[in-house]
Amino acid sequence: MLITRLVGTALFLRVANSCKLSKMGCDENNCRNMKRNLTYLSQQHAAELDQDLFNDYKFSVDQLMELAGLSVATAVAKVFPASSYNSTLIVCGPGNNGGDGLVAARHMTGFGYSVAVYYPKRTPKPLYENLLCQCEKFGVKIIETLPPINEIKDQYKLVVDALFGFSFKPPVRDVLKPALDALIHSGVPVCSVDIPSGWDVEKGPGTEAALKPELLISLSAPKQCAKPEFIGDAKHYLGGRFLPPGIIQKYNLTLPPYPDQEQVVEL
Image (cartoon, rainbow, N blue to C red; front, side):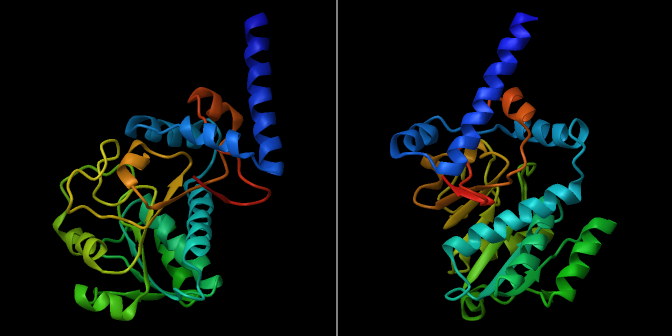
């Protein structure tokens, strides 16, 4: 009983301190220490954390997708504002990462971007069909074929990579190879959702020919491939301000506080 009370008190203090920091911001030393001790999830723990959110905390897929997509759109707007990067191509894959991209497309349209979505392998489920319908109703252009790689930079100033998420395992399917090639060779800034597509979730890019995004938006918690030695000079934001205290305790997460009412925080 005493141990339980002590653990509960420690968790309360940890969450309370996080809330306090999120309201007032962290000073330079605290922020530096937080980033040094930042938690990076393995592929297995990332999958287990998601399942805990679904099973133990009763989040629905579309609920988390909406929060994630809004976080992506918000982070993109902070780094690449619509005033300078108004024409955007979002490349969506067949899984939850692609769903995040569809949500981001809708929000980015509301933020003032002209958005096109390339969605080569569509998921035949009502959730994804509804998200696609919402995109169309909001004025997002759904393109059936990619422009030639050397012409992408003439049509778009920014590309969002929502192709593969943390469940990705090689090889890349043939139908998705042109999309990945476009991300790698487009010649315009790329913003990757949670995982740079084609990367090993734990070991990073693997080769010099891999995708090199200018912005990475980690969701829930950063994955191991998001460590500084892998992403280099890329901007890195964390989004998904929805982790319950019990999840933070179970996975022993050290994450920076979100400032004020922000949905994302720069790492």
